[in-house]
Length: 399
Image (cartoon, rainbow, N blue to C red; front, side, top):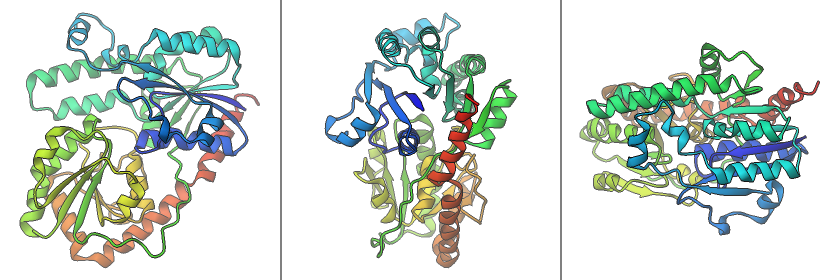
């Protein structure tokens, strides 16, 4: 099968949830004998370093990318207030990308075209014009839901109004555009139910993030004693909001009762404002060269998301690494994880502080829970299981 994978950014290196999700599906398809062509939007300032793109990856995916300036511009945002269009979508539309797509589709034909997320949908007209291939929408999350939750938790009334406006326009766009797709890959059963509630009635299947078989090293690296960590892309608004809430509302409760614990904040594109929180009990690490190695050196992972949608890939990675996890229910949404069985869930500062302290007070219980979570990931999110389901869905378009 010949598949064109359109990505909202270059999916290599797979150093965050979105890149992992895109990279793993390409890898799985190629390993099953399919031909995959990756064409990506490269948001301004994030062009990939050629040094981190291995030759075998470039050869297998025939990766190409088109730089697109997606920065938020105050003047453009202000003008957009007087239109009915979604500013989120306008930022990702590029004539250069349209021209690249048209040229590619004149040269090659594909059996399927997979759009990785909503920010590729402005290119539906050019795809329809130059190709008869079914368009498959892979929903990493439900975009308007993220903005609705951000607006709901915002305290600034002006900002709250503006976020609500963006969310409303995005919801209208998202509801309309998904109906133009031929197939839908939802990342979780929760999201699939929400898409059905938005009126989607065409073929759809749940395709979660696939995790490679990544055995734990023997022996395990020595853990930093009393270590709590957060790992995630820090240019994503829900991560910024959640980590700030954790620093201001949760962490003081934890350290007041157990001063010996230390929090490590890791993730690429860490805003400068977070470095002001550095102290004896908070280390702002920033981007780490190897996320897996970083996780194995720290005991407990926190996922303090208050908004967001889709599935938090870092939770799945954390469970695969055998880490103890304390998350909000929003953070664990769509994973199928159960409180006390796979992780601890808490939705207010007191609860989250309690379960963090509990994990250190009763390490045997927390360790058994982490073992169950690791087995859960191996059963539900293995590459073979996910790819079998995906390819069966794809074959349905040609049966």
